[in-house]
Amino acid sequence: MNIESTIRSMTTEEKVGQMFMLAFAADQMDEARILMEEHLVGGAYIGDDNVPTARAALALCNKLQSFAADTRLGIPLLLGADQEGTWSVMTAESAMGPGNMALGATADPQCAYDMFRVIARETSAVGLNVVLGPAADCNSNPHNSIIGMRSFGENPELVARMTAAAVRALQENGSVATLKHFPGHGDTTLDSHRGLPTVARSRDELRAIDLRPFAAGIGAGAKIVMTSHIIFSAFDSERPATLSPVILGDLLRGELGFDGMVVSDSMNMHSMKRNYDPIDAAIQGFNAGVDLMMLAEEHYDHDAGRYLENQRALIRATIRAVDDGVINAERVDDALRRVLRLKIEAGFSTWPRPQTAIVGGPENRAIELAAARRAVSVLRDRQALLPINRAAPLTLVNTTERSAYDVLTQTRGIGPNQATAAFDVFAQALSAKCDDLTIIKAEDFDLAAIPSAGALIAVTENYTLPGLDFDGALQASIVRALQEEAGDRLIVVALRDPYELAEYPEIGTYVCSFSFRPCAAQAAAQVLLGEVEPGGRSPVSVPGTDVIA
Image 1 (spheres, rainbow, N blue to C red):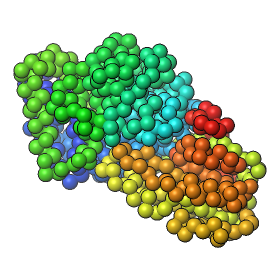
Image 2 (cartoon, rainbow, N blue to C red; image 1 turned 90 degrees about the vertical axis):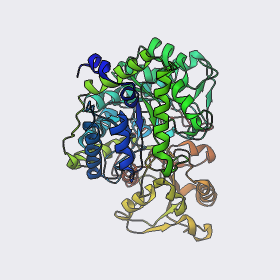
Image 3 (cartoon, rainbow, N blue to C red; image 1 turned 135 degrees about the vertical axis):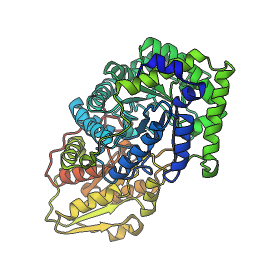
Image 4 (spheres, one colour; image 1 turned 60 degrees about the vertical axis):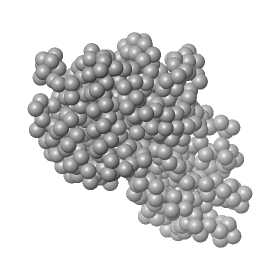
């Protein structure tokens, strides 16, 4: 394809269509066909509800690419997914790894490279050609409700090294990397799925902390940068990054020298929808420098009956804006050049090769388990309780009520999508090796029923959910009660980030996996049993404790 001649041959409708990446529910294939065949939409956001298995992913990608092939120009689609370890697709089968914070705990860029190489191979094997990761955010705010374990850590140098390794791994193994969420989502407390956050750091602070991993990722060759729906008052006090020509033009294109494709974070997030008219936001975003407008996460205020109508209305309004000169025609061609160049450089084909057998295969499982093992950290063992005596009586307490897990698979594709709780994987691993194990459910917790002798393990969990919270209210109260009753023999196993330690800083034995994924739960159990030496170090600090990154 010759880009310039192709652009000259395209109608405004075809050009504008290529500048959108739209999502659709699993049962809305006809809507997807209409958007791709009639409006030449350039890509699709794919969630776990679209592709719960590798076979489903291959079938869907082939079907979507067939829609694109039937258009006048036959331009292949960008098919992107949040396969970033913490969030995932093909969750029931894929080896997505323990997630970025766990990889950060290894402090080894080669470990990040190996894991993202697996992610690239598994996604590209089924036709998903863009990974919407890695998250290059420095999680410097312990109260960050949406990044957390999606970040490699808080130290800019560590995050930069791991980000660069992840980018290289993805793009050297058949995929395309996406740096997100520019210029950094790590110092927020408000989830941008719910509202519009503001970061008040100075320009110097932003350059020293948040921008360093993005610079490293760009230096490693990242082809896509995703914008954040956050106001960075030091650069633009009025507009979020997605709508800011200062941030996308002067900073990203100018100062950092990025010449790849800019994709917006989902314009359906509440940070956008509650503050901007969808049409005005799209026009502002394109004018600011967005090349590809993403409307993923259609579960927000989702009305299936109006979905197609709403998307068509937005595309048509953008076409009118171009015709009326509200969006400059040169800006459109500039965006289109980057979209088409990406598709050419990445060697996208309309027909992925069927290689579903490698998804979750033994080699990939071994790599993710090795990464999870290296991440597990014994942050404290003051009473020398580790490893546990598997022949002695052992009591295992789940501090999470069973109903809290329901939300994990109810986020319409984005989010953890994990049907089996981390606790269950951990408990099964211990049950297989321990002679006398008693398991106590959170619903049945009664301090009077706790045995007066033997090791006592309390498991805590947390999950990064978009626009929602994992209900962990009961966890801290159970841990505190156990600490008061049996502190010297209590082991807390955190299948999560370590920030909770600030709530009970006197815990004497604390083991952290920095992840809720099954491989992390399995690795944590192996550490407790003495089968694996813990090698991780916390990549984040916990205020009020001795845990320092």
